[in-house]
Length: 376
Image 1 (tube, rainbow, N blue to C red):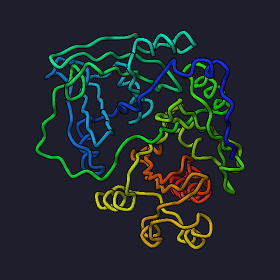
Image 2 (image 1 turned 180 degrees about the horizontal axis):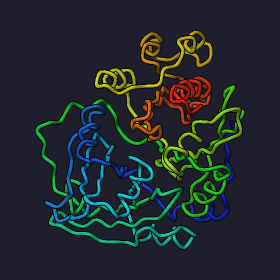
Image 3 (image 1 turned 90 degrees about the vertical axis):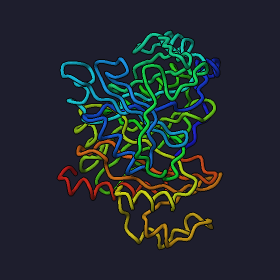
Image 4 (image 1 turned 60 degrees about the vertical axis):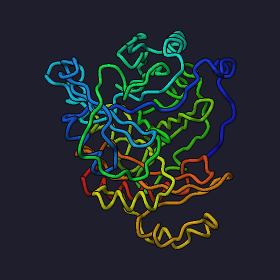
């Protein structure tokens, strides 16, 4: 692993051309939005937020927005076949379509990125209702994934125009999830560096960490990854590509079943990972299992930590340390029938890294699941 301080010259001279305030929401295209929203409320502790559909004047789709702290998910289903949303689901299955980023000026964000080479997804659009105005624009990124730029400084409604508040009698207690820590994209062979250049040139991001196949490998498979971050560090996008190995890597399996490049997982932050994971497990969320031998030399490897080892061992939570502190992390099994999208639960105690010391244990756990599916 190496920390890279060099920034693309174009980005370094335009540090503030795309100021991002963080992730506004993540939108999933799914086969049944109503059921998906119910699942994320029940299993992950989200609360009902807003709804858009025929009853609100939106005739071609139904969308349910749910929220927990600063974390907002939107689930969208087409109401008929023969359109871009239905085609997306038919090809990819349920998955992430929009990574929406909050900005102060969505028009400027679109202009700055498209003039630097981004392919436009949506020219700036202003929508209004009695609660004010939201401005949206968007650009294409890897695969069929889109970055939306959301400007909502002049809006006071539940979510955005076209939606009405979703008042539900069923709102399970939250599980301690706080915000999006990072979103990981899987891209094809030899496509990592071109997309790194895209984020540098088009969005002014910088490459803050790199992992090669010596860092992320097991006896059977390997991958390479570079972590892209915007200037203030509020938005981080690791980008993975396959590397040569004896057998099929997790990235290759994803690309096969997703039928293309896309968002592999979303990392969700918590301030108490033991409590959050205990709650999630009690609600039926399934996590990858690492061998208990991982914990035999844990303290020798990471030093003193605040948490007791036994609960971490019981839950399968991984720990890693960098120069600034340590982090705790755990990964769910895929949440779809296709082995594609999954979630990471992460608690940072100073660490800015991504768990290099856990890669071997994590990837061996993933390979055991691949082998059960017959895809290793």
